[in-house]
Image (cartoon, rainbow, N blue to C red):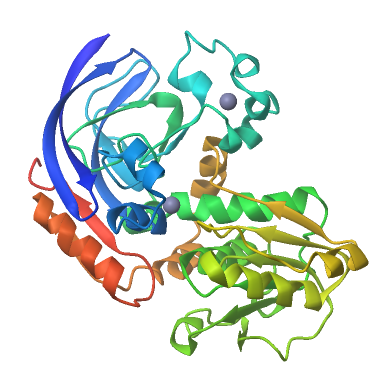
Length: 366
Ligand SMILES: [Zn+2]
Ligand SMILES: [Zn+2]
């Protein structure tokens, strides 16, 4: 074990950040990474604004936020990384990688890890960055080499930083594909005109080869829907036909009920609904029609490290890059001190903006 000193900017209570110095333990298999660029996720925002259950806040804070990001490797390592390599930091660290003494193999860890690397995003002992464990607002991170992925030279930072978001969409689509509910001829329904819905739209077209017109998107804002350039678009979606066999809910919160109920109405018997949105409260849905149509509801959350390799390979495609860059149209923030984080998060909390908010981190150290 080597000791690494890092300056960690933690959220100590809603709206309040503070810098602390931490001594981190580094194993030979870990990398030392300087985070350079990150995006704000709705999950980070819920901590910042205190929009989580009291027990969750109490248990998880103080904590460094941000789990969608990239960085630069600071030291050559045994596992093939060189100083200066750009990497995506995979926030999902399964228990057996985090603590190899307690869980020497995936089988020792949990039922999810036992199923293999495609399922380890559901690990029971997971260490997920900015969800109980320090995220990327640090001068240096110690992170397992197995949970970092080299960024191909062809992929620019502002596209690579979207990897977490895109893998989440990919993982959800992959579940439908595995269940034989998704092929290049499937007419698909997406509920939600935010970043998750948009990522899914680009993933379905560029990775799963769906023609864009086959992707039907239901949103609330015509301004946001305009970014889904060649999709078939609807506000509210009452006029949808009822011949869909696959639908994705990317709404979250209270909106889940109406999105899922409309989805149920528009599905053919035997169809599949993939749930992706998070809600702090229980959500009522029309189970009667689920039974009647024999629908399958599948939950999908997060992504595992294997998905990043696939997604970064596809990100070499200039058309996919162009499509993803559509998400980088909002204000960018340079973070030099805790108050800069407040500016960025206040902006994220107060405005109804399109796309992702990019934060440049640790720029001064270059
Ligand atoms: Zn996220
Ligand atoms: Zn596990």
